[in-house]
Length: 251
Image (cartoon, rainbow, N blue to C red; front, side, top):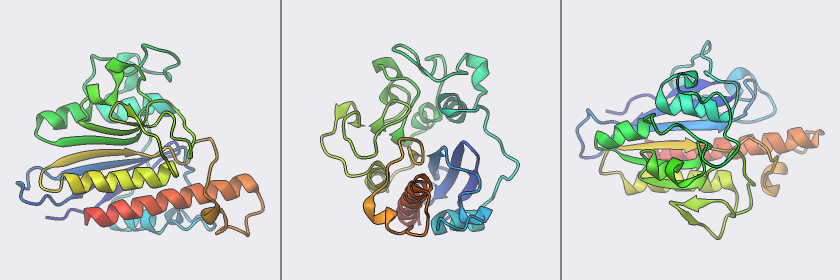
């Protein structure tokens, strides 16, 4: 059975939970997709009356799902919020109130992630995008319940440079634009695991700094005089397009 997509947008994070049909697998194990957008503004989507950025795919999620208009994240910035999201616990309960700022720091090894729990339940588990829960070997996503990883380990990353982007634990050598790449990798993960239950955590770095956008998307906002806002609009557009490709694959 194809369940509706659920969507909630927060000032720091945008979270979408999509439950898609599983081919040939018992309906008791639906596929699970969590999408996070980083540092997007609450009012920068069409369903919150934004006028200068077209976000039709996000608007469709809001229209077909549930909007949590009084929902709040459990932390004010990146890493603690992700720790709360992936563990289902308040980060203050396990001492992760701040962003990691050095080696050996990350999500405490005492904590289980949703990937740990779903992997033990028979799911294929994948992370595409930003991790920011520890950069050393023991905190690596592949040690925290994820079977597959494509992305970067830190808190921010260039949208155009491949250095620091890993597939598993291997450095990649080519990259066009992270938002586009993360959308493609998410679609590929879904394709690879279409005959089994899967869990995918798709964590875009958009629209976190640095402010990088592709020329073709910048050209779509000639009316925006503020160059920073023009770049931001183009970054939001890219994330909306990537989410549209992923939504199409889950239907």
